[in-house]
Image 1 (spheres, rainbow, N blue to C red):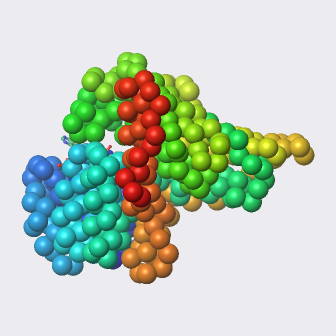
Image 2 (image 1 turned 180 degrees about the vertical axis):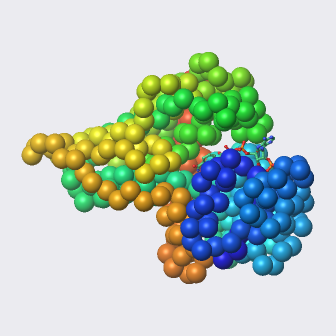
Image 3 (image 1 turned 180 degrees about the horizontal axis):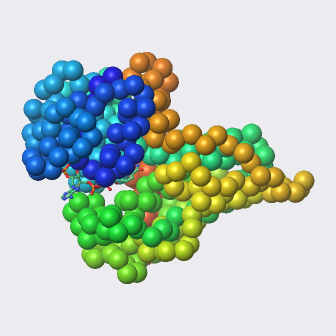
Length: 332
Ligand code: NDP
C-alpha cells in the first residue's frame, strides 16, 4: 500500500510515519501549506514528494490511501477531496468541526466505496482490549458506572492552536473528550444519551476551554463521569468501571504508549490483569490495511468518529448553556 500524508504534523512525525511503515507500506508524499516546511519534512522523513497543492498530491494514482492530520478545521474539505480522488482515508479526530461535516465525510466515503477510519488510538491499547474483555465476559456483572481521568499537562510543544485558536478546533473538548467518548463507547457498547458539563479556562486556554468535567447517562442506566484538562501536572490518567460483581481500576492507560496497570477487584479479592503491550498505532494501521484488503473493519471507523464528535459537541453545548443536552448523532 502507498500512502500520502495530508499535513506536516507532529503526530505524523512522532507516531504515524513509523506506524504506516510498520505495515510494509510506503509513504510517497506529504502536503504542507508551506513549501519550505513541506520539503524539509519530506527530507527529514525520507518521503519522496512534497506538495502545497492538494489536487496535485491526489492526482498521483500510485497513492492508495491518505492520512489526514492537519488542524481540525481542514479535515472536512481535505477528506472530501481525497474520497473524490478514490483514496482510502485515515482521518484524525475530531473528524470535523460540525456533525453535519463529519456525517458528510462518512457518507461520501461509503458512497465511493473507500475505507474511512478515525484515528482513535486508545481502542488499540492492550490495556483497553483487556478491560473490554473483562466487561464483555461479565467479570464485573452489570456495569453501574464509569469514571474517566484524562487531565494531563499539555506539553510545551503542543501549546499552539490547541489553546488559542477556536477556529482551528482548539480546546480540550475536541482534543481529548472525543477520545474519552470513543473509549466509553468501545467498552460499554452503547452511546451516551444525555450530558451535563462544566468547562473552564484554568491557566492555558485563551478563548477556548482547557478543562472540562461532564456526566453522561447511558441507555443501560449506567452513569459516566469524565474529566479532561490540559493543566494538570500531577493528576495521572485512568479509567474505572464499577459493576454489580466487581470493579476495574486502570491507571496510566489514557495514553499513546502501551503502558499502565489494570486491576480487577471482586468478591475473590484483587487481581492484576496482564495484557499485551503492543504499539497502539501499529495495530490501528494493520487493521486499516486489512480493511482495505476486504478483511474486517478499522479499529475505529467513520461512524465511530461521528459519534465521538457528537458526544464532544454535546458536552461543549452543555457547558456553555448550563443545561442537560441530549446527544444528537445526526441519524447515525
Ligand atoms: P501540529 O500542530 O503538529 O500540526 C498541525 C498543522 O500545523 C500541520 O498540518 C502543519 O501545517 C502546521 N505546523 C506544524 N508545524 C508547524 C510549524 N513549525 N510552524 C507552522 N505550522 C506548523 O498538530 P498535531 O500533530 O498535534 O495534531 C494534528 C491533528 O492530529 C489534530 O487533528 C489532532 O487532533 C490530531 N492528533 C491526534 C492524536 C492521536 O493520538 N489520535 C494525537 C495528536 C494529535 P502544514 O501541514 O500546512 O505544514
